Length: 260
Length: 269
Image (spheres, rainbow over the protein chains, first blue to last red):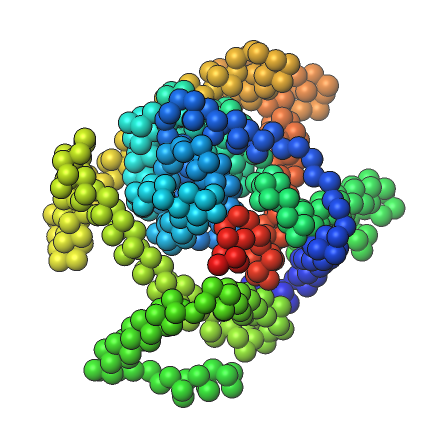
């Protein structure tokens, strides 16, 4: 079992990073304005939905193999925004899910999004469906849907593994406009090669703040940037310390961060 | 350990027919909780969900941060970690039933109304029934092993194999020289690929492996440099961002600060 006492340095760092995020959230809630840079992949969502409207073909949203966790919930938050936009244009949507726990939440999210868009009567209970929790059974099911329905737009957000390229290439072959984002760095090259827009790294977690512009989320996003600056400083001090012969690897600062 | 004893005496280990009575009582309790939650007004339900989320998160945070006994590597909460994990498994089991129900409902309707592709739905429904019966009743038989190994695994392998063709088409698009970045990408990929394969290594094998400036021009050395010095730090940087982003969103979920469209809609109910 892993505990903080195994390595207090790491535990303290995690606590410090969490405190920074909380601090910026509180300052944002108290009215401080934060700037957020443009993320092309998220700007493309409206364009992609518009294209589906023009073509009269469905929009596909795939949360990958995500379970009911941070990654899956973030995917649903992004999908919720897409569904509201799609509901306004009367687009048909499809959301195959691989995890049964996420499926139950996804069904509610879709229903609530239609209600929030003022179109509860357009909600189709068959638009969200559980396929299989086996990786390649799910992959073949989604690929089959893409080919049969000739989807106009495909949104791939969540946890993806070897099946990522199957989805992306199937979408590419039917001429779908594709926007993808994943936390799995090994799958990013596949998405970059096959999709029109790819959300890289922590942009995935920035999506809900970017879309909603809600102060709490913006504060959290700025807190994340401060944390990254802190990590960058630690790396820089470490590099300088290791470069100076008088300090080297025996220097206390380096020792503090050295895995034993 | 006192907490463990207290809980142990409150919920003694059931045996014999008591196991079934306990399961029945637990199931009844779940039904009562379910209907009680449905009856709650939206605001109260939201508060309850936030409170349970906070307590569950607090349990894992406290278990991680509280000092442990060096001999056992446990603190007074560690004993409960498997039990809390079991609760999550039970909830997941309930949702699996809902998932299968969704599948049967959609494909059952398709078969009954003879919609386009209903034959495929029949095969799917038959597959579910046959695999379930085989798994429950004939687990140690050749029939089950054959279904699993010869049919299911072969289908999986066939699907995985399609990746080989998809990689080629994706690589072709990625390496088309359209811009300065694409050109750079193509050259980097070419060098890395050549550096990994014997014929590529043969092209510069006459250069010294190390110890002189000429060794810097060996394809395998350039390939390693691209992978270790250029690529790995970029991947680690993305990893740092993802780790911090994950921490931030976990904090927001734990403290019920998340305000996506879904959470906002829930709050309004």
